[in-house]
Amino acid sequence: MTSSPILERKKIDIVIGTRPEAIKMAPLIIELRRRENFSVRVISTGQHTDMLKQALGFFKIEPDIDLAIMRQNQTLDYITSSVLSRVGEILDSNRPDAVLVHGDTTTTLASSLAAFYRQIPVGHVEAGLRSFDMQFPFPEEMNRVLTDRLAEWLFAPTERAALNLRRENAVPDENLYVTGNTVIDALFTALKLCEKPGSPVLFPLAGGAPFILMTAHRRESWGKPMERICSALLEILRRHKDCHALVPMHKNPAVRDSMKTILGGNERVILCDPLDYPDFVWSLGRCKIILSDSGGVQEEASALGKPVAVLRDVTERPEAVERGTAVLVGTEYDRIVHAADRLLSHDEEYREIEERKYGNPFGDGQASARIAGILTETLR
Ligand code: UD1
Ligand code: UDP
Image (spheres, rainbow, N blue to C red):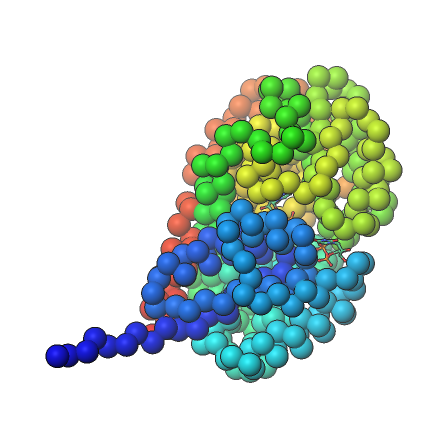
């Protein structure tokens, strides 16, 4: 009798720390676990706590290891040094064949560095995004550039991102892949399950009342810019009496305090905790317009053909601006009010934007399958 060859599974550690990393890596975690040639360990640094858990919950993923580093008002030094040393210890205790990281957070950079110090190859998902301004977004632009240098394989979501990497000679051409963004994989999964809102907070909006969806959390917007953003929202509501606003607040006290002070008590503003992913996707689909400084929201809005006024002066996602689904408005009161006014008042322009969801530039929902296929070939 001949025995069948024993399959040697390649060990992959996936390190995540924040909500967007969870949402965007979940489809890849599921795809890699479906394939029998990999043994996947999910390591949460716990840079976020409840927001990470909430995002993973929808995909039914439990981290294998949770380093639980989060502190209230944590500093960049603290996150960097604790992730570097704690992820390093985990990698030493059971050395993987590869480490995968996502995007541009401090978890991403510090975990890549921990792997690099051990000469463990790193795959960077969502590589190559560039705003070309190290201060905006801060510190994410530097995190991305450094992570791309530390990584062995770069998974660029778009041709534009790949071009940025080629110009930097970041890796040899054969290690650079254009895969689409895994956020579209996640979005398509959630769209199947979000016909009705789950959270009672959303019930008042389920009847079809027009509403503005707003999220803002960027570090460079804390304080005065955040106050201007919130005041601008009030002015937009004053001009559009039929409109409501839905504002799911990030858990960061620096963000929540400004929002509560300025928006709290207004009867047309729903201020709430972060929404579960399908509820947020429901809101993206049903709202009239979006005001946001989020990276992921720009991609999702573009895929849904929903106009988004981006509360930043520069973006690393120019594809959405070029397609006309996103417009950069910064954090100045007048520009925000003017842009929202225009989107809410020009029906024809609005309908044209809606049509642009066909052929959105960020992906086709197959990014995770592509990355898993590439890793199958590379990690033999
Ligand atoms: C982080 C990322 C940012 C990403 C964002 C996604 C860095 C430097 N920043 O920013 O790139 O866009 O996540 O949301 O990596 N908090 C909670 N519970 C949570 C999460 C956060 O209470 O579940 C509070 C804590 O007080 C924490 C603070 O928010 O100290 C800030 O969290 P942190 O991860 O440092 O920064 P973010 O602004 O969330
Ligand atoms: N999101 C969510 N619930 C919310 C707000 C946002 O699930 O209440 C999702 C959103 O759909 C997107 C991601 O969180 O996929 C964006 O995360 P965030 O804005 O925190 O980070 P960024 O993308 O700016 O790094």
